[in-house]
Image 1 (cartoon, rainbow, N blue to C red):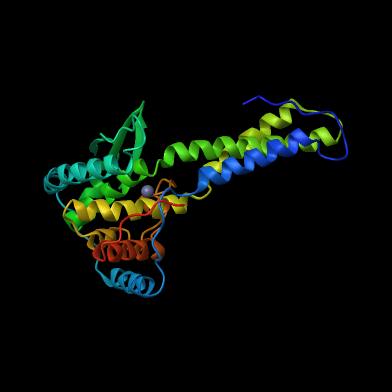
Image 2 (image 1 turned 135 degrees about the vertical axis):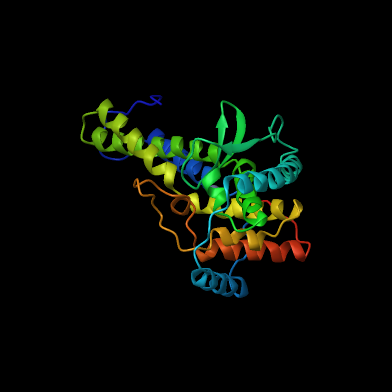
Length: 283
Ligand SMILES: [Zn+2]
């Protein structure tokens, strides 16, 4: 990312620079949006989500499943979600040549925290769930919903989009840093490099809530098509839990804030499925 040179002029911003800024800003906006429309989660859905939250707060602490029962739950649920997720992914990405919907789905045996994630191992789409998370679930529906939500990150192309955002954000901040030094009459390559670092960090955390909600929307549809109940499943999130682990790291509830909007989004998507309203791309 060292592709541009700052002019040594002062005063009005030079034309190529404004074009560069506009280009970076447009790229940032384009990379940030969701691919699919989120359902309208207001009104009755928000009220119902509030009620579910209040109910979850009154429930007694969960007794963890044995490791054997957790493994059996994963063995029951994973093949069904995997088949439904692959099918749904293939339908939605039919126009994207070479899009890989064959996810490597397994338990992460190393992970001691309750967590689940989507990533790429080289180019292989990969979903992992930890045994402690499965041991903490109260139903097959909850494991199904967590796994289906992670398929949502694949179909929403959230990792690619976040990389584009980081790049565009870095470009924007880099250009601005360059402007500050260039207008002072002294172009400083180092300031631009520092700017690039700051932009990358800022871009990587922006708009993640929209992606979580999009994954919940896609995950709700995959959960239903796998034969599970997404509203039962979403109860896994609807619990008061600390956002950080004892080690100070973000917990699953830290990276997936259990706000009412998430549960309301699941309820609204379920209502759309019941009314036979299909997923709609953003225009
Ligand atoms: Zn997520």
